[in-house]
Image (cartoon, rainbow, N blue to C red; front, side, top):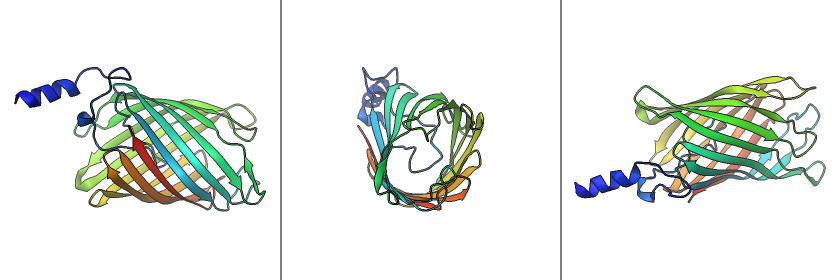
Length: 249
């Protein structure tokens, strides 16, 4: 009983970069990727998490109404830092974009900065609710400047299911539409043992993609993933198969 009380005392209270949450208090890694719909959960205080789409292939479709070339994307990453209890800071960046049609690397980016502020922790029927101020900083003229507030929700459902939802608005300068609505939802299910499968749909304005794939935890701090996104409408690729991993320290 004394040991349990000491562990609870260690796990509770204020933690942050100066005093990380002890490893024994941290649950199995929980990630935004490979879902397009992101989780409301934040990185444990004082810990760092890297989520990487090591390689993906964008096949066909129309980007900005003109580009139908196949692209190979390398290291589209999310760097996450648990600043303090229920708050993390994230840097998202696409490091390399190779156009097979042009036979050259294109500009990387955009650089995405966001903060997750977990307002409500999940309890019974009450979902986890997180406010996520987000900014897209362009690295090339083809990438628009965008910023706005997003909200993430998440529920643990009976039968090993998990439901996540995202919604919000992004604002951008002319000549593009000044406001874009973001709507997304994902359903994840434990398929066998630790392996989970998911299906989700993500819409940024009229750009809509369906996603599906698998998540395979290797340890409490390492996860592999694979799957594909399928373009349904707008400036989306026909298919984007991907392979990635996530690691936490």
